[in-house]
Amino acid sequence: MIRINSKSKEKHGVQISREFALRMFPTVRVSFTGLRTDQRYAVLMDIVPVDNKRYRYAYHRSSWLVAGKADPPAPHRLYTHPDSPFTGDQLRKQVVSFEKVKLTNNEMDKHGHLVLNSMHKYQPRIHLVKRNGESAAGHSVVDLESEEYKTFVYPETTFTAVTAYQNQLVSKQSVTKTQ
Image (cartoon, rainbow, N blue to C red):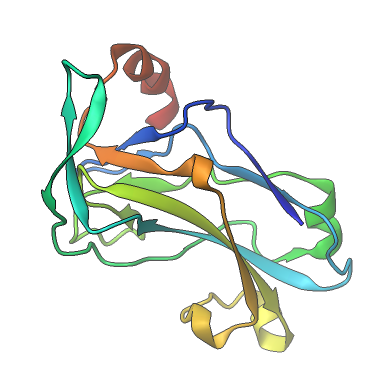
């Protein structure tokens, strides 16, 4: 079992994505139960498009409207939590925070940040990957499909990537959290 913990109560959030990378706000935090205590696990996150549309914000309606077809998808990347691998016992006793995940719209990024297209809707996913033998020693997950894993998706974490917040209150709250 996994539980998601986010401070945001909004049904649909926004995330800043610029050429220089910024941290996600609010932070995705997860906790796990029911794992084998002696098994080692890697915890990963990726962010995938929700649909094939591009959006725009209508200020007079205070809502998002479809503005056309999506841009070509940004390069897909997996973010491995820096404390991975964990034992099942460690995961049972702590909340795993993805506070160091950084987002960018720079497709040429060479720092491993997650690349998003602005004005597109996205869904974060959490992957729990069993690690055995050499893989338990910290070798990174390159191809998720070749691993034994389980994916967790929480609809309340969907967001639209933007280059500037559309809501000034959210903008003020996030300034200190994303740098």
